[in-house]
Amino acid sequence: MKTALYPGTFDPVTHGHTDIIDRALALFDKLIVAVATNTTKEITFTTEERLDLLRAVVGSNKNVEIISFEGLTAHYARERNVAAIIRGLRAVSDFEYEFQMALMNRRLVPEIETAFLMPRGKYAYLSSTLIKDVARFGGEVDLFVDKAVAKLLREKLR
Image (cartoon, rainbow, N blue to C red; front, top):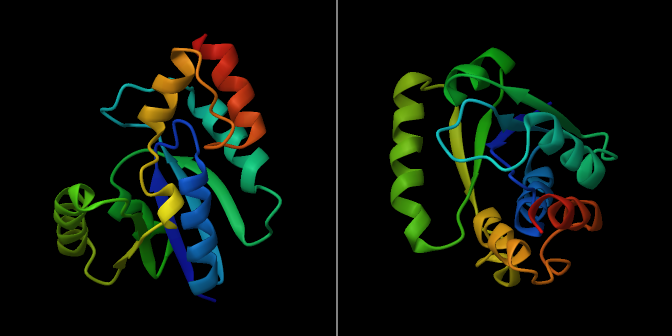
């Protein structure tokens, strides 16, 4: 059974994230969706809220495991014995950072590959940051996120 790890902050999970999850599941038997807890990013939702939102959106899929982790992604990937780390690429601007991270991960754990997946074109512009900005200023986010996510965004940011 081939397992992949899809790490991220998922603050919050978007349709772009779920599209990457669907694409990864077409390539791997199991996908571990891992919420990073030791990020340098400014986080809006707690780790538990992000886990709950992921469970609400993709938790019914028996081939998806939703967890949180601390530390280096590469070390966690090795600990879980995954075949690949999944990374989403929305635009060329993502590539340089993701490429550097993939090379560092390869240096740390050469036995684990990084697989770059692109979302469908209609999701290529989505980012959690943009969606939070739209919600913060009263815009509708229902086209970009699951209903449960939209509800929590409205509660937390308006």
